[in-house]
Amino acid sequence: MTTRNLLRSLYFFLTMTLWTSELFPSTLISIKILRVHDTIPNPVKPDTTLKRYLALGDSYTIGQSVKVNERYPVQIVESLRTAGYNISDAEIIATSGWTTRNLLVALKDKEAMPLYDMVTLLIGVNNQYQGGSIEEYRTEFISLLKKAIRFAGNRPKRVFVLSIPDYSVTPFAIHADKEKIARELNAFNLLNKRISEIYQVNYLNITKESRKAAWDHTLIAYDDLHFSGKEYGIWTTLLVPIIRKVLQ
Figure 1 (cartoon, rainbow, N blue to C red):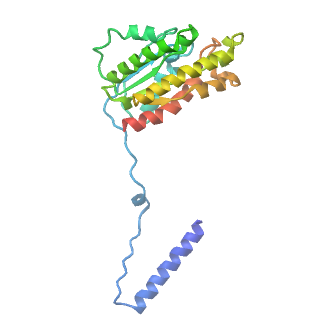
Figure 2: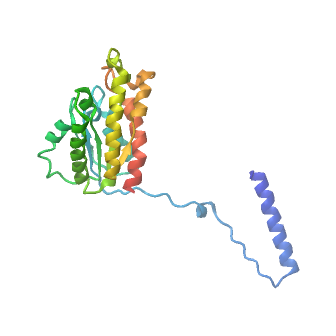
Figure 3: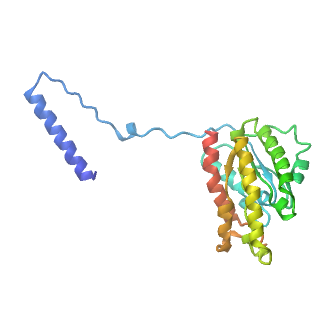
């Protein structure tokens, strides 16, 4: 309904009301006019208690070949702060070249770590790249996911798993068997998604987004292998609404 039609309807209603009250003075008609702010619910304010964030992974998490402020965990923190959340700097445990085995070793002496309000986990590309078996990945990914859940205070919904991006679309893989890489990564991602569903954690598929780098080279870092801060920004944009829904 247009504004003009709305005004006409309101005028007709008020006219009829006054006419009715003149004909039937004993009839009491009460009209409540709603103000605009009465009809709009108050927005949910973010919890301002200090939040802690742990990011687990490999080169994609540490942000190989991008600036520190372009790493996706750092962009997540900045996005949440902009939205009003009180969150400390991301604590990142990740190194380029790490497999699930390497990450498990790095976490071996971290059992006494403090609890976190949110934990992200992105791992597996080096398992595929180094020819690791999917069975080994299954076992070690489950172990990592259990640790992530413990770090999140045994709250599965505070854990966010990201799928493995597809590096076959980068110039680095120009002479490689791209179809084989993509096929194997699909298998690894199918597995980590199923495991994530079993353990009832959040799962974000970023693989489809990463494949857009095949025709948009601004999504690739200067080393022609890893992804750019722009691509990490896309991951952030997809992940932050899920995180905010959980934190509220």
